[in-house]
Length: 111
Picture 1 (cartoon, rainbow, N blue to C red):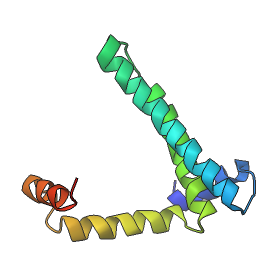
Picture 2 (picture 1 turned 45 degrees about the vertical axis):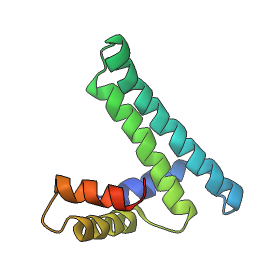
Picture 3 (picture 1 turned 60 degrees about the vertical axis):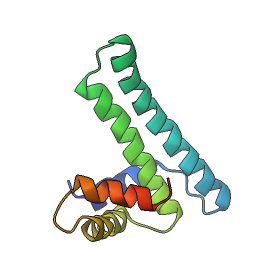
Picture 4 (picture 1 turned 120 degrees about the vertical axis):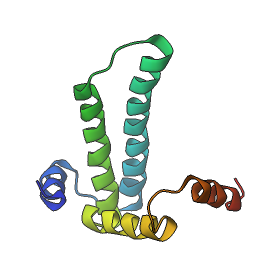
């Protein structure tokens, strides 16, 4: 499946709104779904509760849906978001991941 196919099919299930409230709700819902994913992983490590690939896939699917919804709310496509991210990563790590560069970048951000 192409990401644009996913996006067009998934967004058929989104309410069509084009206002600031829809943008805020999409971002908040994305945070909520990411929190559900984090909670699954937390329970695995904190309580030794087993989690399955299907559970992870289900939560990742919800996250992906809301990523698509946020992108749509801001006039972006998933393809353009993916492209922008790859451009940023190539600029940051032109020869692939480098731990010392990652630490240096993190320290220069003033974190």
